[in-house]
Image (cartoon, rainbow, N blue to C red; front, side):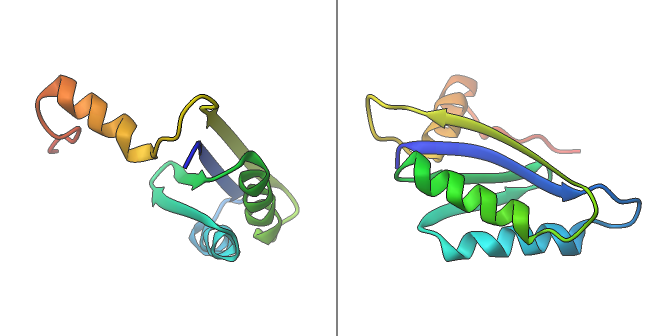
Length: 103
């Protein structure tokens, strides 16, 4: 896969956003993308930028609310194919350990 993005979609509300965020994440299932949700957003991988934009738009539109905030950060590596985990793998090689800390 060659396009990786960090997507964060959330309604602007005072209460828990979990239900609406779940709707945004579920909307991604309609597209040929892989994704992993973390506490700060969802990392999406797609073969092309059009698919990624379509998936992000569907996630945005899936959230119900008077106001929805969406942030999309894209890494579109055009000269070679790669997967998101390769970025983490490279950092972990430099660290010499897993890129996780205990609290």
